[in-house]
Amino acid sequence: MRKLVRTLFAALTALAALAAAAPSSAEITININGGNIQPLPIAIPNFVGGADTAAVGQQMAGVIAGDLQRSGLFQVLDQASFVDRITDPNAVPNFQNWRAINAQALVSGGIVRAADGRLQADFRLWDVFGGTQLAGQQYFTTPENWRRIAHIIADAIYERLTGEKGYFDTRIVFVDESGPKGNRVKRLALMDQDGANVRFLTNGRDLVLTPRFSPTSQQVTYMSFGTSEPRVYLLNIESGQRTLVGNFPNMTFSPRFSPDGNSVVMSLEQDGNANIYAMPIGGAPARLTNTAAIDTSPSYSPDGSRIVFESDRGGNQQLYVMSAGGGNANRISFGNGRYGTPVWSPRGDLIAFTRQSGSGFAIGVMKPDGSGERILTEGFHNEGPTWAPNGRVIMFFRDSGGPNGGPQLWSVDLTGRNEQRVPTPNFASDPAWSPLLK
Amino acid sequence: MTTTTRIFSRRAALALGLALLAAACAKSPSELDGQLAGGAGGAGAATPGSAQDFVVNVGDRVFFDTDSTSLNTEAQTTLGRQAQWLALYPRYTVTVEGHADERGTREYNLALGARRAKAAQDFLVARGVASTRIRTISYGKERPVALCDQDSCWAQNRRAVTVLNAGG
Image (cartoon, rainbow over all chains, first blue to last red):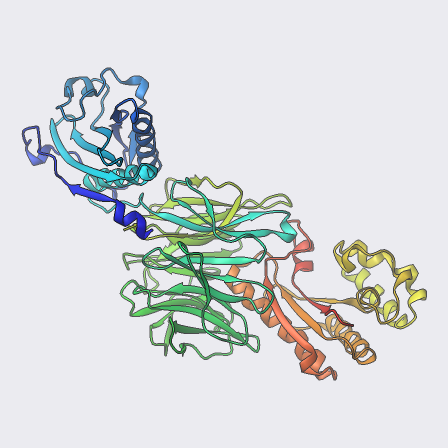
């Protein structure tokens, strides 16, 4: 991923605004906190390209359209309904022709091959009824990175129109599942958040579980069974180098990075109990819980000061919050059922969890003090939430059951609306969302 | 299901070390669980002291209630037979595999499986098996043997399985 950073340049708003400014009161925005969201109609014509880039220009428009449509906040207009075309991405569009199809926003873009062989992509976002340019940017990248540029442009559009950071230029690490239910082959896999560019990180020989990204997205910590005890490892995505975390005699599991990336917090099994340890990378372990209970699924608050985890110390699985240094823990879950797999939102305001009750397995959120619990989705089996970096969308896995059934990845908005299946090549579980790529 | 197992277990106890007599019972465990003994045939072929003898005539697994690690009477009986058998065949070391059903979350089930394996290990040690002969491992909910979405299947998956290690 470092290589990408080197080859990716963004010239922020390098393009001069071509249209006169309209009164700001007329500006289009999407209120994503509203009760009833009306998706914003947006037209995304193919990016204008030459003979060697027109095909990429069409694909880029498709990726941007896919991102925005799946967010549930945009209604991407069918290109077949267009009565005008963009032929010069640098010219002011004929707004009248876009108003005619009721597009409120319009994206115009161009893609050319620069002298050094890289792709140069320009885009502008237009307020069709205000007649103004809302955003414009220029990017250079190596040809194989065109998808990332499309996601970055989609993020820019999302941010300009919602006021929130986007989440499209991100990846998902997950467990790819194949083979029969009783003897699944599980491989670590990496893909773009929209399901593209799937890449397998392990070969399936060892059972692997619960991968989680480092804050730089360059490493994954996960649990692997092998010939010895099942243990927590670090995997460098670029080099493929694998290292053991800690040197414990027993099973270690349920790892997650600290927000600064300097340590991994995880469970160590000892004499049938599981306690939580913080493992500074290359340092000595610090024991954070010391009970005769199952303490697991630790997740740091984004400021690194606290840890939410699950424990059955009170008789069954519930959520607790403690200081990052350990010590007293306060129970925060008091609803109907058992609570597990807590994950702190990147915004810090909420904790997502799996709740198991008579009505099945649900994904929900609550505030860090336990108040404001809301169930986002519920059914036979939903498990393992992970947050989009902007804290607006949660991905999880859903198993439909049945002897031939298996888990698939889904996403749902924080509002509980807009459930979307996330495409994967096989059954898939244990998703973890990366931060925005750098 | 439970009743069948219990009847079989009692018979199997009588047949300990008399493998040929166990032939009549041989079908019961394979009906219960197609995974048993790696698909080996009837117990008539089970040589005393063999892995098949252990699986078929002693019983290699015990079952647990939902979210429980307590050993019920039946589980204690089975583990008692395992301890007797391991005393007869000291060349074996074993791995106790703890498992959970699919009706739990992944991390918790790993810990629950470890607790179940530990409960079985503790019982075997209390019955005289050297703790150095017993390794434990948890597979959580990763290796179900019965695949339906009913408690009849989940009950079979909540288990601790004593696996003989190679070298016996």
